[in-house]
Image 1 (tube, helix red, strand yellow):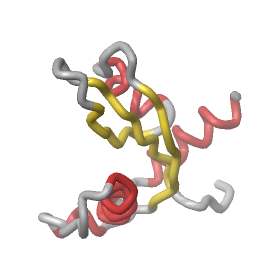
Image 2: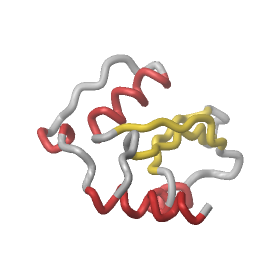
Image 3: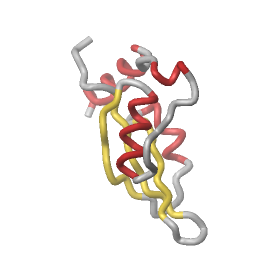
Image 4: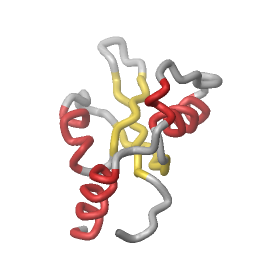
Length: 96
C-alpha cells in the first residue's frame, strides 16, 4: 500500500425545501455513494480534503463551513480510519 495523505472527503452544498444550501461531508469514492445518492437535485460538490480520522475530518469540515470548533463525542472518533477504507479508495482512484 502506498503512503497516502489521508482519506479523501467531499464537501457538498445541498438545497433544502426553503432554498437554503446545507453543507454535507461525504467520503470520496464508493464509500460515499449511498450518501451522495441522497443529495437533492441541485446539490454542488464544492471542496475536497484529506483527513486520517473522523475527528480530524470534522475539525477541517467545521472550520471550512464556519461551524466553529469541533469537539469529538466518542474516543473512537480519534482512531485512524480502517486500512480497508484506504484500500477501497485507492483502488477507486487508480481506476480513474
